[in-house]
Length: 213
Image 1 (cartoon, helix red, strand yellow):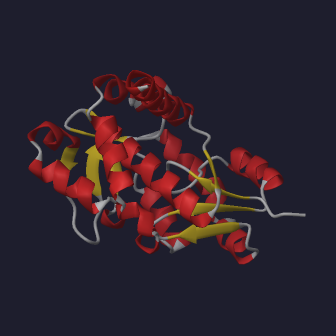
Image 2 (spheres, rainbow, N blue to C red):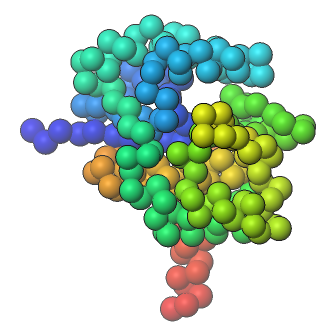
């Protein structure tokens, strides 16, 4: 029987224990794309965000089980720094295309689905470590006037950057899709918002194709 393995997106970890159990009934393994390999550190990072949104509390149910699940091989963690497609021109172009679409940016609002998130300057934000940011996207956030609003607070090599939720959603979706193709994994999500955003991306591509036909 051929193995069936999946890559979870767009977040670094699935936080809902019931959802994770369902995934492990459907797939032989589930991979997370995460700069943080240390499960204890990942748990502490989410605990540090619990005051921002109660949704982060859900990870407590999984934190203790994660080392055992990884030891059994049903959960895997890959660093984006090991994924060549993270910095591909296609990944960069797809992200910049999303952020150039006002309707897509407006739709990328976590408050519509009460998703766990933080805020900065009164705006929903997305924490991301630098290895998960395509180099071309990072350069564009600094260099292009129309994109600077998406860079809420730059970080360092060891501290997270805060991006607009739209920018974080876009680069994470595109980085994960590239990784899924490179690793031969099925991309799956439990986020209704990001499923909707994926459909919007596909609709934009179909529209371009029909106009050029």
